[in-house]
Length: 405
Ligand SMILES: C[S@@+](CC[C@H](N)C(=O)[O-])C[C@H]1O[C@@H](n2cnc3c(N)ncnc32)[C@H](O)[C@@H]1O
Ligand SMILES: [Zn+2]
Image (cartoon, rainbow, N blue to C red; front, side, top):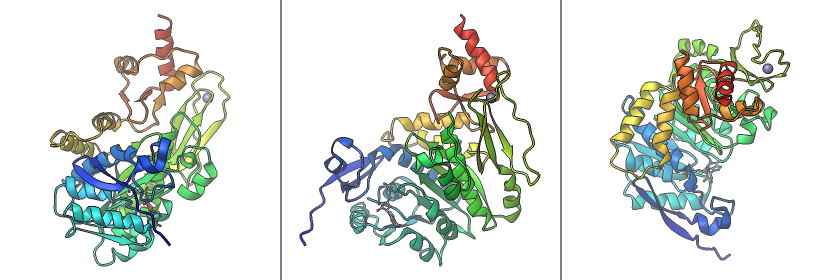
């Protein structure tokens, strides 16, 4: 049979130039990868990879990384960027089930001069994670699949432990994680998703909850380092380490988020063998809205402040200005919100809709809240949302005041 040549193009991301199938050629008007793309590369995920480079560099300031694995590598760009843009002489194992992707990734590895540091294997990611890690465990595993990462997480966990390591995981099955298919979320991630104005936070917490369960079932604990949420995907970075006592303690980081669409109040309740008896405190008098329950999911911290500060320093000291222009502001907002993740973010536009009010600029609301003694911050999740220790009732009062001026 006559094999068609792949139409390729040179791309540059960060400081790394590489070849991959031409996305525009194969995707036409859609301008993003479709199934006709022979080798997967999505230019729209650059900010994901930018932050991944910064976060790996920040991680390496505290922990050694000698061997990393990207078992679903596509064109190879993610690992190529790690090799090219992060310090150190670590080695990498890459893999893809698509032979064309393997061939492309191998050529890219060679062209960039990394043949002595990286191997590209053709095969199944799950098998590779187990087989390639038996002699030396991976210090960093990056799972970046189509759709759900759930099937890859058990072998990824096995490929890190009993050593400690960094695990980064992307999920793109947003309808499942954001409440369109709550039952699929339950079977995939161990908790129900719900529709709510903070649905992406539920998504991230479901993913972290599932990772914790994987860690916990292997007597490991996890330390959340950072998360990233966009319209189309979420991503999390966690440190995994063997520690039975910590893992036991972290059972209190599993819980549920309760939400009432009638008054937009949400709260967080840990799981308890005695059941959940705390009363739900509606924020509009007489509200009889029914309460949706998301989870079980991770109710603990989403970020490590020192880790974020290190990543910001890495960005500031970086020689390249080739990062996506969104990367610095994303990091800034993550650092702002990192101390305020005890309860979900609040979408001010949704709150204004509920009370028939005209939206007021976020910064004004944040300042008013601070003047009144509350903590408040922007969030990277959504430009119309904030995080605060104030309730939706207290925010609504400020919004009413501004609307009546
Ligand atoms: C989302 S793409 C990876 C993108 C890449 N990580 C990046 O940052 O550009 C997912 C890749 O997984 C590959 N794949 C799908 N199922 C696989 C499996 N079971 N084992 C190995 N690779 C697989 C696909 O061929 C595709 O290249
Ligand atoms: Zn209510």
